[in-house]
Image (cartoon, rainbow, N blue to C red):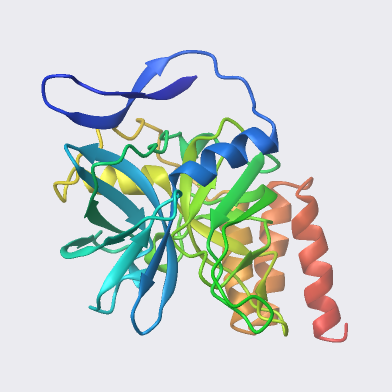
Length: 293
């Protein structure tokens, strides 16, 4: 098992997450929340636009934040609000979108010490394992400011063939607009994905089919784009045949596009591979009910 921890090289002044073999025990939701609260930031523009991000690196007084690219896609005067409530100007010239996926990094400068995310192995996050999402929902009529939110859930699929923009991890947590770019953590408090997409119900609450981009996707791209966080993606064997998770995530995408018959076909394909995929049974039944079957 890989265990990721922080190290501050005294000579070069860079703090990054490095890898060491060690057994890591599962943490309680409260313990994971304490970790998430210290690494998750609010990203706010003057327009205003709201999003979230995760602190992943420190070099000198420069911090690097990982977020969803759509959070910072419009050039504007953004601020990063850190866990201690301090506001820092986001250096927009530092924004680097990752090619082909909905991820970007950005930087801010501070002399304060902030915690960094521990990088996990997203390939190890399988159906039924714990997932926690942290972020800052946008203000609503009821709550007129963006307040840190932490949501419990479970992984429902981890596809080997991602959807458009790199989304491949599916989880059941309830999330809201503004939490895009926030951390998705495992039961050890490690960063396994960046949150970015989900459905909306009539109350504008994202629920059920939540999507994140696996952290291993970022690690594979970061080396190519000059964003060094000191961690390499594991050498996971490439799937040679479709997984049940691949059909499940495609079904969810088709359901969102109201291609209900296509969704049913994909749920059925997922169940042929994994007859014990309970959520695929449930969602196929719900889709049949939408069609009036």
